[in-house]
Every structure is written in structure tokens, then in C-alpha cells.
Length: 322
Image 1 (cartoon, rainbow, N blue to C red):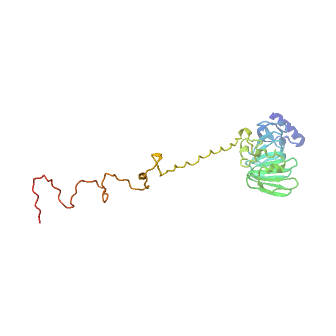
Image 2 (cartoon, rainbow, N blue to C red):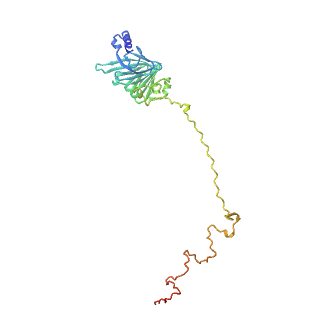
Image 3 (cartoon, rainbow, N blue to C red):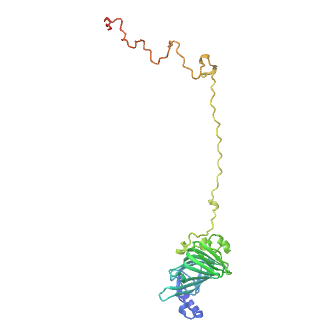
């Protein structure tokens, strides 16, 4: 496959460019191919070489990823057309110029190890200047161009002047007439501005890239919010009605005119007494002038007298002095 493609490119070089060596100069290779991606010699496959002045085309569902000799990476999305028309190395094997011309489609670019001044990307609306950069760009059929900065810095210059992209996810839109928008953060409204839902598929998630070309776009996504399938929607349950609270229990009323032991019998007069009345005394117990909490000892002693003698004690009374 690679040999046949090389032969076809050599033939084209003889017809249009003269020296065969210039037409057949290899500048990179394909690293990933999805669906259909075509070069000058027919369909491309992984590891197939890419040559200077070769036009690369993708189908409506095609996707190709390429790496150039200086490490620059290029992804080409569906429905795209691009030509690498300048690829110049000097005697020290350093890249002096890499220029590609994009006529339509969507692309992702990551600069290689060459100087930023060596890169140039041409679109129908103007030129993208590269300064150590990663970015996506889209070219509509009428030439309208959108650029979204993913890393580093870039510029866009057209008939209406130049704009600088310095903040990650900055986006500008330009057309052939020189109209150039101010840089602002990209969002899904850019698709409405471009009038194409298929634009910028690497940011919308409609096409997936592999390796470093894939993860560099993180943070600038314009994916649409995915609707939740009906089977995953959890129905909201109606709140359970609160159970009625039982009425408060009333305390039973006490009728002091009735005997609590027999509610049917009226209370006697002697049962009626105030709530804080003193307890009734035992009728058989003599009342005291003062209630003495001490028990009744049955005898009395003088405060300083001797203990009472037994009348039957034969001992004589002691003689008191004084």
C-alpha cells in the first residue's frame, strides 16, 4: 500500500512539480485512522507516510491522526480537506517552515519542538499564528473560521485586523469579509453562531481522539447535557398524610363531696377536711399541752436530781451536805 501510494505521488510530482524528490518527501505518518481517510494515492492506513503537498480528505464520518517529523500532531475530523504545502528543513535538520492550508472541516493542532515562528496555518478567512500552542479550528464551507485555544497562545489575522487568544478556552470567529469577533470563552452557543451542530466535534464529544490529542481539550468541553432516560427517572412519591393526633386525655375530676372508696355514697362530715389538715388523733390517747416528739418515758427526773430510789431498798438515804 505504501509503495503504491509513493509511486502515485511520484507520478504527480513529475507532472506538476518537476523533481521527483520534492514531490515524494515524507514529512510524517498516520497514527490513527477511522472510517475513511484518503491521501493522494488512495485510502490511508496506520503507519502510512504523509508527503509534502499531499491533500488529505476525510469522509463524513472519517477521522485521522498524524504526527510530523518535528513532533507536531494534527487531527483531522469528519468532512475535512487540508494540504501540507510547505515543510522545509535546514542543513541542521531543524524545521524552518511548516505551513498547511485548510479549506474546510475541523482540526486539532499541537505544536512540535520547532520554533513557533516556523508554523503557519492558512484558512479562507485569515492566518492562525502559533506560539507553542494547542488549539481546535473549524472552517465552514463559505470560509467562516472559528479558533478555540486549548493551551499556550495564538493569534488570528484577517482583512479586518488581528486578535490575540491568550486565555485557555478563548474563542474567536472570523469570515472572509474581515468581520472578526472578540475573544470569549467557548460554549455551545458557538454552534449556533456557526450554524453547524457538527462543528468542533472534538469539543462536543461527537468524535473521540486518542493519546495526547484527546486529553489536551479537557476543560473546554461544549458537550450537551444528556437527558436522563425515562427508565432511570425516579418518580417522586407523594408525602404520606400525617396521622391525626389523639385528643388530650382529661384528668378525672375529684368530687370532694363523695367518698372516694364508694363514689355512690356521700362523704361523712368527719371525712371532710381540708387538703392540708392535721391528721386526726387517737381518741384513746390523752392530749398533751405540747406535742413532744420524744417517746413517753413513763417517769420524770429533775433536771439536776439524783436518780429515784426504790422504796424497798434497805440502804439508808445518803446524807446531803450543806
